[in-house]
Amino acid sequence: MAEKLNTLINNMYPNFSRGIVKQNAKYNQDLSSKMVLLEVGSNLNSLDEAIRTSKIIAKVIAIYLK
Image (cartoon, rainbow, N blue to C red):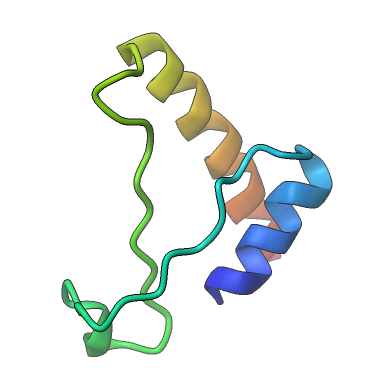
């Protein structure tokens, strides 16, 4: 699911995603095969940047779920 979302977001917004980090840590993602942990921004981003990013991610997820 994460790879499909990443492909879709990069098709719609080239170079938007920094990719997928695969780790053994679970962060409750083991509770369902449909769980994805998304991190938006960092301590170097402003709140406005995070909000704009969240709107883009919401559009991509809506298209993915159709």
